[in-house]
Length: 321
Image 1 (spheres, rainbow, N blue to C red):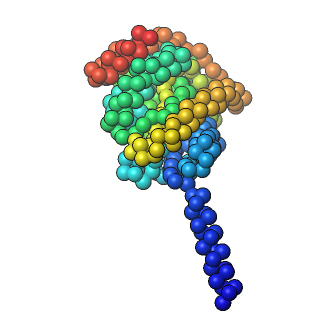
Image 2: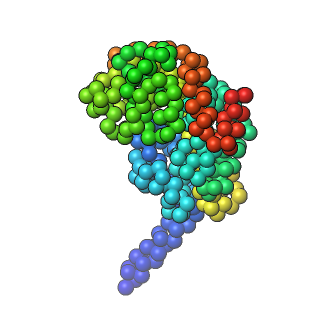
Image 3: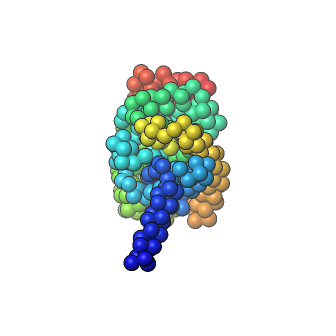
């Protein structure tokens, strides 16, 4: 009887001890990248910073590979309170139209101009609208690699696009822009692109170097034409209600970890871009320097026509940076 009482007492003490060390808050962080992607490495860095600097009061649980659902599903889950954080981009324009500026063809001429916009008044207008209309708070941003054009003939100027059957995502702005440039854009699911290139149903496609590599387009495309036609970024967001449910000191821990995560990812991104170019060259792809200014000039009327008044005002502000 005494042994049983002692065992029960010890078990109860163990349970109380575990409860005493349990986190006060849990952040469920779901995103689409795989565990080896630099976005996930940045998320792991965020987890380490938050858990250490909160003395274990916040537990960050990371779910890569769409484990919590696709991008839109996770956004909806955060709004419902069943998830807490994600990495998302221009999909936010479904609520906040200014988020469309995150992926407008030839809005930015350089990485420096993009950084100036995102970190300045333009970026603040976008993040304010996102927060007000989605209930999501951007706590960091990551630059995405520029979208480049692949083909089996070199493309240096818009004239070289004549008749090129080009796969584009099902985004009206992309379709109108490539039509204006002289190509024949064909909206198509990404999963169908490799086979369509292999069967000559299409002649080219456009994506960042990371996707060109991961999709093995080097097996069916010879050239990477450096059009740099979309320089864009993506946000790490947290649910506003979740953030504000924490005491002020823990909110500051999360926000500081977000800034640290942004710097950490930027370092990884720069190294990864250099690695991607070398890797694709080693696999036989030839890089072509396209006349970016000529492409931008020819695309501009189609881009401006496709934007609404609010978006156009911000687009013009970007051009004046």
